[in-house]
Length: 93
Image 1 (cartoon, rainbow, N blue to C red):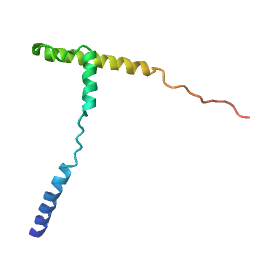
Image 2 (image 1 turned 90 degrees about the vertical axis):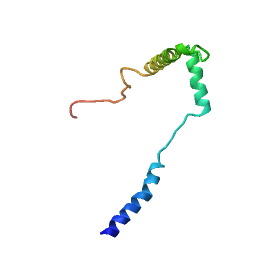
Image 3 (image 1 turned 180 degrees about the horizontal axis):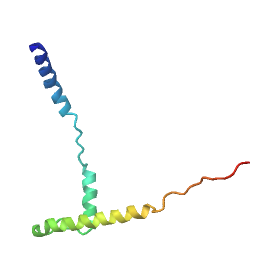
Image 4 (image 1 turned 60 degrees about the vertical axis):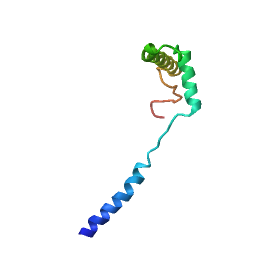
């Protein structure tokens, strides 16, 4: 029984680092960060602005971007669904 407990402990100790290193870390690339920053600046965020206005200025620009993206997604979606090309008939012949 003691041998089984020791084996279980060894196996769990060996598999724990493997399981924890299997996490996928996706970080933004430099190009993605530059694109995001240029979108924020286009929405009114000033990177060289005052530190006193920092959180409010950034949140305002992010809200503008979110509203623009929402309008774009609504424009591409139709509220009526797709067209149906089916046919139907009733009665027997």
